[in-house]
Length: 228
Image (tube, rainbow, N blue to C red; front, side):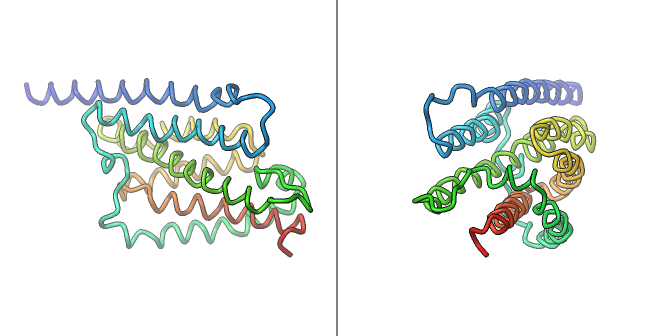
């Protein structure tokens, strides 16, 4: 009797997570269409980032309260994670040469940094600082949603399969990016999902994501003559 009720509860929890994920993914993709007209590139990017933060962070944190979970249950766990840094440091070390090579391509330099900058433009570094606050929060949201809300939120019902469930939409949000980066999203989704599944935390994953993004922007700015 108790086992049946527990199973039913888990099924209902999974349904709520799936429905919330569908709505979140829809808004994350189409929310940018509602950006006010005649805005600057910075405003447009901050609006886009805001849709990601609402979709991938605010919604999951509200939903877990509804289904009886806490933030710690979707990876917002600090205690006992200090020793996990070495796994993510190894991933960063592996990523560095690939990012460095990719940064020499025209396709990469046309896309990064996402905030377009022009030599001699006043306030460019000020704009970049504002943008990076939103950019970092977006990575907190993305890791919380895909590695926390989906992987850890569905783990009790689907076990290791939750890693693959989360990787499919994670790949799809990268379809607008260069093919090599979209391919890397498959590997990254599986590896980061596995680490989150085992460590029950998303914070080192957030640190890795931010570090790689910072490296990408740094190299792109360097190739464009803004740093060296």
